[in-house]
Amino acid sequence: MNSTKLPDDPLWPRAAAWLAPGSDERPGGDMALLGVPAFRSSISPTGAHATPAAVRDALARYSTFSASTGVDVTSLRAIDLGDVADPDGLEGEARVSAAATDAGSRFPLLVAIGGDNSITFPLMRGLAGRDLAGWGLITLDAHHDLRDGQSNGSPVRRLIEAGLPGAHVVQIGIADFSNSAQYADRAHTAGITVMTRASLRDRDLSEAIAEALRIAGHGGRSIYIDIDVDVCDRAEAPACPSAAPGGISADELRNLTQLLSRDMRVRGIDIAEIDATSDAADGRTVRLAALLVLEIAAGRAFEKASST
Image (cartoon, rainbow, N blue to C red):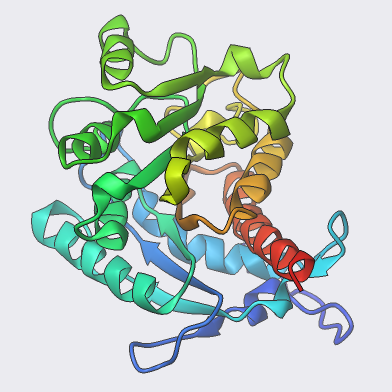
């Protein structure tokens, strides 16, 4: 996507330049970015391991200013921690969890770029440590992710089995004909709150997000957000192998993402299930992921400005 030379304008700073390269020796900041290029356990063949680098490249196409909120994300100190090496398998998951634990000790917010949706399990485990029972989870996803085994279809089930209370899990965007009755029953039995794609059509999105945050963060608990981009309409996210026609729009996803990130109880967010190698020629899915990173930052910058 960077094959075309982009113009250089000192009055139009690029988002790619805002992210400072980091290391274990650097102090913390407002937000950390971490690439987690997992792909080997995916149910659908995927090149999701190419996505973190592609998203970083796409950030060069956007500025740092959010016109709708009036904030510039350069007001946040954001550090790019690079990628976790070989994040697949049990040893890879241990490396992901260790990276998340380290980031969580230095930054109030970790934003992870996948990789497939298997990354949600080790990232949340790493951030929560031994307090998984004291956290909540919100997923923006067409699927329940309650499958058996260890794959991109099982992170929510694995987290609940590891101690995450189902009563503090909210799933937004669950799609018709993308799940089974058996997994819907699992969600119900676990006490998960489900907001289907159909239910969102006639609902104010800000009210839905307020309800989700109220459930997931009840009692002041920390919250993790899993953004599986296949919640979007397939026309807007062609690089998501399991995206279906009729999902939420890219604009709705951007809006939901910014609203969620304004809540300071949110400690971790992942953006998953994009296969950069199968994107449309215009790179629309990868560009959406880059914009989601910026919407997260804008939400935090807006909240920071509002509290001062």
